[in-house]
Length: 316
Image 1 (cartoon, rainbow, N blue to C red):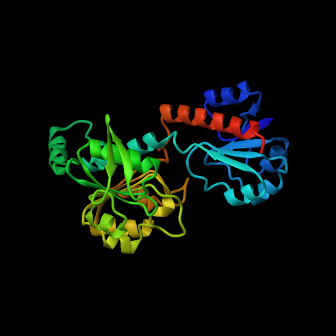
Image 2 (cartoon, rainbow, N blue to C red; image 1 turned 60 degrees about the vertical axis):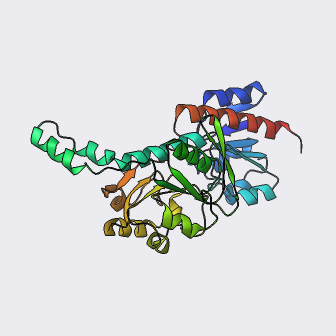
Image 3 (cartoon, one colour; image 1 turned 90 degrees about the horizontal axis):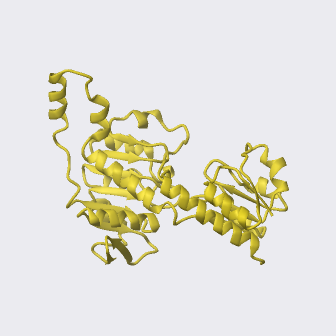
C-alpha cells in the first residue's frame, strides 16, 4: 500500500503507517501534478491546501482512502468519493481543545483591548504612556458575562467548558443537540435550558459573546438580520468557517457600534482576506491557526495515522 501525504503530517503519524507496512511519501506535489502522480498511490492525506475534487478522483482509479488531517471536509468531494467506494477519514477530536483555547484567547484579548494597546505602546515618553492607559481603561471582565455558542460539537463543548470554568453563563444553539455533557475541571455538567436552548434568536439577543462552531452552509448564519437581533456591544468570535459570517454586514455593524469587536481566525477569501476587515481596529485577526499547537498537531498525526492504517488494512 502506498500513501501520498501532500500537506504534511507529524512524524509520529508517518511512523504509525510505516510500522503497519505502508509506504509513505511526504514529498508534496502541486494541485496540477496530482493528476499524474496520485494514480500511482492507494491513498492520499491532505489538510486544507490540497483539493480532492471529482475530476481528480476520476483520474485515480486505484484510490481507496482519502484522509484529512483536521475536522472540515470542504476541500473534498465527500459524497462523490463515497459513491466510488473510497473511504473518507478525518481527525475531528484531535484539535478541539486548541481551537477552543484560541477562541477564548481572542475573547480575552478583545475584552481588554490587547491587540490595540500592544500596537500603540510607545517606545518612550511618559505622556504617551499615560494617555494610552486612559484610552484603554474601560476593559471588560468576562466572568459573569454570557457566552453564546452556535454549534455544540466537540469544539463548541470545549469552549463551553472553558467559559463555564471562567465563571461565565453559557447558552447555545444546535438544532441537533438537546443537551450536552460538559467537562469543567473534575466535574461533569449537563447543560439544559436555560443554559442550552434550541432557539437561535435567544442566543443572538442574550449573548455578550457569540462564537461560531458550525460547518459550511449555503449562506452565512450571521447576516445583517442576525446582527440586528444582537445585544449592542456584542463580541463576535469565529474559528470555524469564514463563510459563516457576512463580512460586509460585520463591518457595517462594527462601524455602527452594534458589534463591539470581533476575533477572526477564518475568512471568506483565504489566503487573501478583505483588507478592510484586517485593517479595522475592532478586528483581532489570526491566520487560521486554530489547530496550530504542538499538542494538537501530534494528536492529529496519531489519529490520522491510526485511521489510515485501519481504513487501508481492513477489507470491505
